Structure formats: C-alpha cells, structure tokens
Length: 253
Ligand SMILES: C[S@@+](CC[C@H](N)C(=O)[O-])C[C@H]1O[C@@H](n2cnc3c(N)ncnc32)[C@H](O)[C@@H]1O
Image 1 (cartoon, rainbow, N blue to C red):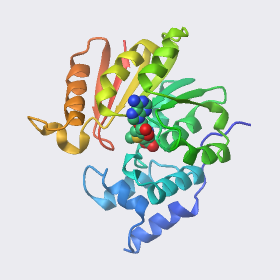
Image 2 (spheres, rainbow, N blue to C red; image 1 turned 45 degrees about the vertical axis):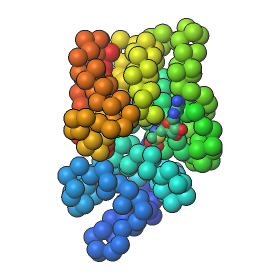
Image 3 (cartoon, helix red, strand yellow; image 1 turned 60 degrees about the vertical axis):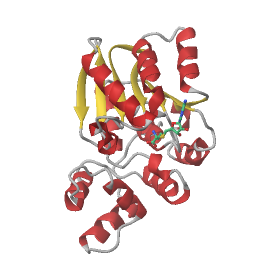
C-alpha cells in the first residue's frame, strides 16, 4: 500500500482551532502562517484552512519541527501552500514532479502524498543538512520511495536531467529556491516539462517588494524580472495567484 492523503484530525489541528476559538495565544505554526494571510484577517485565514487543508500528522509534525527548530524557518512554506500544490499535482495528473528548493522537505512531503503510488518527485537542494530534518517524516508518512533527493546546485541537477534524455518527461515543476536563479530554473524546467505540463513559481509577490520601482536587492530585481518575463512569454499560459507569498502558474503550451 502506498501512502496518500487521508482524512484524520491530528491533535495539532484540533488544538489550533480550539485555541483560536477560545482566543488563546497563537502557536508558532499559526503565527508563521498568518504572515501569509494576504487579507490580514486571522479569522478568515483559519476558516480558509479549516475548509481546504485536510490535516495530516506527518505534515504537521514536520512543520512544527521546522518552525520551532530551524533558524531559517521563515523559508518554510505556510500550511495554505499544501492543498494548492496537492491540487496542482492531481489536476496535472502528475507522475513526475521536479522541486527546486527543498529546505526541510515540507512541500516535498505535501506533493509526495498527492502523487500516485508510481509517482516520483525529484527534489533538488544545494544542501543536504535541511532535508535530513524531513527525511524521518517522509519515511513515517510512507512516501520516502516517491522522493528522489538530488543534492547540488539546481542548474547542474536540472542540466543533468536534460543530458540524461529528460526533455519533456516532467509533468510539474515547482520553483522555490534562490531568487537570482529563478530565470535559469524556469528555462531548464520549460525544457523538462511536457507540453500541457505546469511550472509553479513561488514568492512572486515577494511580500509586496515587487512594488518597489528601483529595487535595492538582487532578490527583488530577480523576482520582478521573472514576473515580467513570464507575463510576456508566449510559450506558456499564465495565472498569478494571491496565495501564500504569491504563486505563478505557467502552463507549457
Ligand atoms: C525557500 S527554501 C525551500 C522551501 C520549501 N520548498 C518549503 O516550502 O518547505 C529554499 C531552498 O533553496 C535552496 N537553494 C538555494 N540555492 C540553491 C541552488 N542554487 N540550488 C538548489 N537549491 C538551492 C536552499 O538551500 C533552501 O533550502
């Protein structure tokens, strides 16, 4: 039996709802998530999660470990990204996914749970240190065999996949790594993804900094440049979502 999402209600989720309705102090997880509530309305954000995120004890365990134990915890996606990515995996009927930027493997786990038993996620990160946090959760969730962890700079890893004949072999790519690398990852994924496949780009609103006319950081410049480029790119259909820190969906024609 391979592991996919199930409908359970782990304690963490129940506690989140009870604490919120009782007006008690918020957990790290909730505070982290709230930074991504575009409307800024805690009640509405919790309502949205309660009606779209189906609890999973492994996802919640890894999220909690990451947010409480990692100095770079801000790199971890919010809960709301999980149902979105899982839905995209299912809508594309993906059997092969490439993730660029794993960190502790929270989104890796979310997508792996949505993949069919014979599906695979090629998960690339420049560091192996962070993924070691997620690996026990991947195993406990029963999806370790669906995850091909590839350690190295993403341009090299994706380049190797192309050199190995991977052109057009991937159903969905998710870009969530260093911002100056986004353009290269997008171009490489456009070659790896099949026609009709999807490239998902995270952080495209960059916490509002995309509105800076003269951005002072390389990260902001890179995000603005990739947004401008994808918008004008005839090779894809595009949709930008105001979810999390902004997510672009680029469907390869
Ligand atoms: C925002 S985090 C990924 C978060 C993860 N997707 C999640 O939501 O849980 C970005 C990751 O990109 C990795 N990274 C940075 N530069 C990279 C590169 N050149 N190649 C591959 N990974 C890189 C970092 O090590 C970091 O773990």
